[in-house]
Image (cartoon, rainbow, N blue to C red; front, side):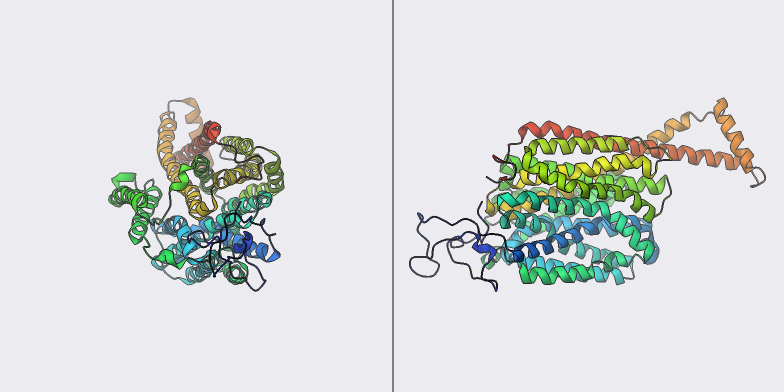
Amino acid sequence: MTAITNDDTPTARTANPPADAGGETAASRLQTPPPPAGRGAAAPSSAPAAGPRPVTTRDWLGFLSMVVGMFMAILDIQIVSSSLSEIQAGLAASADEISWVQTSYLIAEVVMIPLSGMLARILSTRVLFTIAAAGFTLTSVACAFTSSIESMIVWRALQGFIGGAMIPTVFATSFSLFPPEKRAGVSVMIGLVATMAPTLGPTLGGWLTQSFSWHWLFLANVLPGIAVTSLVWTLVDVDKPNPALRKGFDFIGLGLMAAFLGSLEFVVEEGPRQDWFEDEYVAVFAVVAAVSAIGFFWRVLTYRNPIVELRAFLDRNFAIGSLYSFIIGIGLYGAVYLQPLFLARVRGLNSLQIGTIMFVTGAFQFLSAPIAGVLSKKLDLRVMLAMGLCLFGTGVWLNAHLTNQSGFWELFLPQAVRGLSLMLCFIPVNTIALGTLPPEQLKNASGLYNLMRNLGGAIGLAAINTVLLERASLHMNRLGDNLNLARPLVQETLDGLATKFDGLVADPQAAAMKTLARMVEREAMVLTFNDCLLLMAGVFFGGLLLMPLVRRPGGKPAAADH
């Protein structure tokens, strides 16, 4: 494994990098002999390179600061999900408008994630991450003090765009900074953060809203954001900027990528709510997504300095690993979306009660982290990933037996199994996808890899919402067909309900009919949620079919990039 210094200039691997205040830089991981003549002259090719230097305390502190920044960015995707009704009331927004508090963030983040690789090479990891952390903090303050839904949407879009740079940068840095023998532990930490953040989002968001107000969903980012910005600027030094890449920067490719990914995200987010192509805006953006996709792929495959480098997909492990990242995104975001929705619509729980139930998954993720770390050193990563997929599918299948009385204890085992499985999925797929790539491809590949997880979440949520609409209608019709007043059981139920309402309302029979109709609607919703969960379980079990195509990343699981 060689570290990334500045892989975009011909002298980057031979020139002696300047030392920082501590006397060394992460760019000096690959030590080379001094040039024989002149500054920057190439070293003799026969000179042996020294081994990688030890990772210092300064490196660890800087990297941990970056991990905290990544946690904030991922957390903000879901932290508002359990408090949208409170934000809607505070901003006097409509039900259609409030959904854009989530959608605008996701669209902007999806555009930034693949762009971050090029920006990191131009600016350096340190500068890009510092700008991202500072911008994320400032836009969080703006979100907290906004007074209209229009300005909230704008600030959320900026927050998602700027914060999106922090997520893939951490993944790339973990492979360029740490030697293979330390990557198993680092992968555990990154996996725990990346999977716990969306799981804990509804819990933390519900608690902040119930204890203080919805404004604290955003103000909670301020102090950590200031700390991350300061520490990353002071401590991180893993590569050097390459301003030469600004020449010939592909602005056309950037525009096409933004149009493609932004329109695609809009279509999959709004399509289920607007009856897909029956809505004029969804149809228009679908056309824009298709046309810009063609232009984007043509541009990146023909331009000399493309905005995104797709050559990483020629690596079979990276391509299949990215597909698994897509599948994990479906489960990670889909489960966190479905369960709170069920608890709110069917059980009528508030955001804090929902968050308390959802905390089980996060607790078991945390408990499984050391187990996953040990297994990643002892097991073939392909076996570990297969175990994770099986466990996640089993957890979702166990969850697909909901009733209108399902509560904490009924949901405990499914959540526990799902929580245990996430780390077993995330750690091996991270190494399988990125561990076999050469260092010069890591930054761009990391963006593409993380993009696939977010696209999996977005497309998965669109599919879930479509299934919710279609299956709810189907179950309502089927249950309604059985509500024949000629059936003794139906008549007995109505008579019993009418007796309860007798003396309480003017028309007990009408009240009984309305109550029965609500019961039917509730049961149709329960059946619909079960259908969605069964489909999600099928996706994870189906993912096992690709396992024979995955190559073992190395002789030992920990040495994934050899």
